[in-house]
Amino acid sequence: MRASFSFTQLYVHYVWATWDRLPIITPDIQKEVYGAIIRESEQLKYTVIAIGGIEDHIHLLTGFPPTISISELIKQIKGSSSHFITDEIKPGEFFKWQGSYGAFTVSHDAIDNIANYIRKQPNHHSQKSIISTWELTPK
Image (cartoon, rainbow, N blue to C red):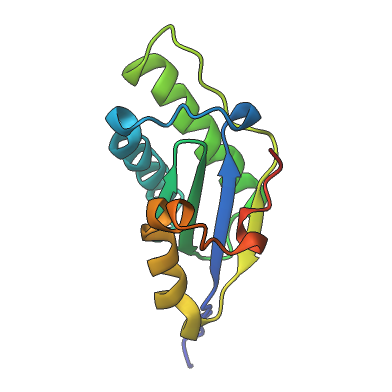
């Protein structure tokens, strides 16, 4: 009898913002915030390919198994990272994510280009070379 298995090759680029686009992902906490997002993604069995952003929003590129919906992933990541920030990094200080998010499917051939775009977010924003479709989260 042949063993059966499922094969998927799925990639999604997510974008979400801080509450009212407040610049609260400051350089002093940025790496820790990204670390919390990566840890939660990996716990959910999502492979993080790239993460980046600026003070008011995050971009995340993942590969993932089809075992959890995109909305559930975002809910888990936003919830756990917000909890981590308000309880561990900056207790007593305001931090909240916006309720909305963007999610874009990515072809395997485009992974490197999108990952580079995500990793270079500060440059793109300072040079105004952003890709507007990927910056849709309302202000």
